Amino acid sequence: MVALEAQAITCAPGPAVNISIPPITVAAGQQIGQVVGSANGYRFDSPPSSALRCTTRIALGAQARLALVNSTPTGRTFFASGLSMPVYATNVPGVGFALMARDPNRPFMAINTAGVTLIVGDARARPIVLGLDTRIYFVATGAITGGTITARNIARYTITGTPITGAGYYAVNFSNVTINAPRKPTCRVSTPSVAMPMPAVAARDFRGVGSFAGSVTRNITLSCAGGIGGATRDVFVTVTDQTVPANRSDVLSLTRTSMASGVALQLLRGNTLVRYGADSTTIGNPNQWLVGSTGNATVQIPLTARYIQTASSIRPGSANGLASFTMSYR
Figure: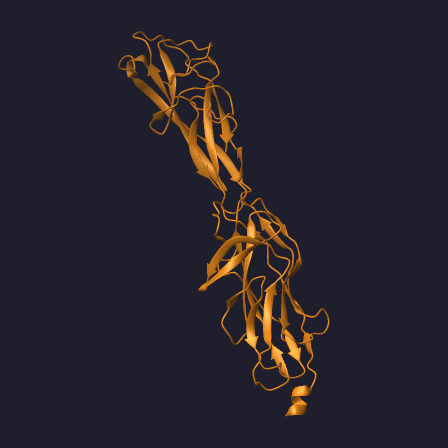
């Protein structure tokens, strides 16, 4: 027994765990403290050859410890699977990570830079083989603009008082991880010109000043694409009276070549009259309105045109209007 205890023990590390993760797209509206990517984290086991293989059992009381390295604490914690884990910074602003690990026969433990004991040497048979399961979570720590988490060694598995060949530890490494920030879609107008052929109406179809006759509905169509992460874009419209650009009322002027008088045109969006504004993309432009928010989609903006009687006497003839629409996005 004495001779056995005096035998030199040497451990050799298996191939490193290289944490290879597919590109992660950050969800729109990602909140600080929330998980980024998989809600269950990313789990990695040591290869079949194991994390550490030793020539004999480790000494009684020797500790197999896993410690984070090359990692700066953020001061935040992340809770998962019953564990409160410290969050460490990555090189991508707004993205941190938390790590839990275990010997395959034991519960997971939160890992930190001070090191955590996963196994204590006992009287197990020799030779001894130590496995390692790890699970990493990415956590939002601030605004995320995207980037690549660069490859590096983040954790080392060692045994106290025990020489380990090679680098002297079993390595847990990051491979490059691409973080894609949410991206809003880009919208383009599919109908740059919208003709609204009005039906013929007679003077007798009106019932006095402020009465209406004839109507037609057509759509402005947008195609919005290229967004990622569920991001949306706000869509606004301003309609401008091209005959009288300073017009800010809800009545569209007749063109100067129109022959009719005593009537004008109105546009409606649903049941709401359109008031006219300047031809400007500035958000907050007078009489601009919000269509809504859209992701990757085709957007239809229905507009209805109708005649309105504006004077007690109507002179028949052509009654045309010309308006432009200006889209704004946020």
